[in-house]
Image 1 (cartoon, rainbow, N blue to C red):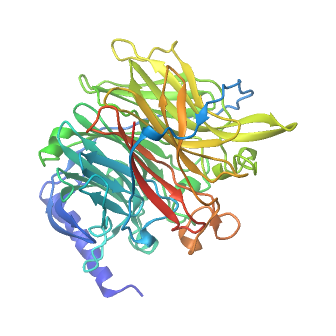
Image 2: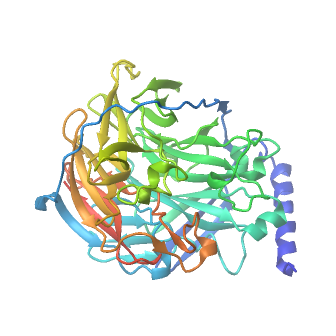
Image 3: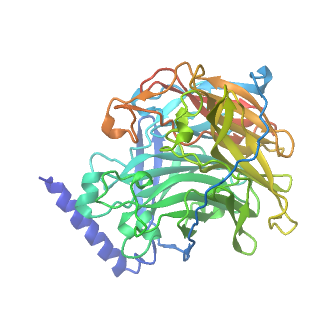
Length: 543
């Protein structure tokens, strides 16, 4: 039986929609966002609420994706890989004082810093350091999502991202929510919300809510969820890319990435938001633009503030779609380019069955994970698989493939300038790259690496040393190997062999360090056991 306060909650929600319509707030034509102020203390927060006026939304465009089978893979030059150069690490800090239950193998860390002030998030925790990473204080990112005195429909879920805008002196904090399954069925909706926080000091935050069901219009808007975010800064805008996934109530698993879909199912969308930075920095967030593109999956933007944002998604095993959005004239372009064919990682296919190299890619997919701009070029990296002969047998190795294009003077992409770039080595698998230029324009990278025979998963750091080649070195290694054992099987996705999983999360993070133009901030983690909470998050400053 539902508790009495639930019916009161539904009545209050119904009345709020009547109130908003009666007083001129658009419900069907824009997103109703709630602006509130939170002071995030240790383990708690203090919030005040008021209503922000509705948000304007652009129309979306559709694109059907075609699939082809790659018939051959051209040879790739192997990447040199070395032990860590000792002076490459300027600072190394364990992000401690986090409750163990808040840390998991799907850690997905992100970091932003301003001098000694560092803000660091994982999937279920946040932490602040005011002394350059020497000490850390835990912050509870779920508190204002889940105020226990007033049960809410939207709860804090997981994905978080942070970024620092040096030009406007603001930290930007993205948090993703969810609706629990019992509430979803009661209100006939799976649509979640995300919250964007803005702060000068990481103590006092102005928060803004964006709701998935106001982005996706039409009869099925209640069954779309925002998921898999990335942040990027332009000269004048914050850009947010995220999937908008069809998530029906009758699914046995609410993560529609792994729900069997028929050709007649409503489409998923890849989506980009553009929010004026002056509105965020002046605590006056009143409008944004959003462009959902149907039948696409995972938009990833470049990292480099400029007046044109570029982002991309994979089309087929030999095609990439690159989008651009100009801040000067508001032009929006999409162009498809051919790239060298590669084997697409398929968690149900033979590419990830090899017990020596590629088995820990079994819960991955071939998606773009990183993008950058530098020296009048743009580049993107993605997960892939590569076959090669060893001891007279074919083995598959997970690796990082990529493409680099030159930019014309007007910012358009030179379609004839494509060059392949990759990170591949016969002794290791590589996955989930993150890239960013430092303030001198050098492109830095972090990624996972490892194999199944004798190497636990580690984190590698490197730099783009010429037009296409990466200088890679080991940054830190785990002390234990996969798989991970989960205490509660019902809360862990895509299990293999009962309660064990090879799922390690979707990203690491590298950002420019604003104290030194040659440095980067890195958020990474290692495994120090075989259970879901046996994880240690790290903060690095590298050069």
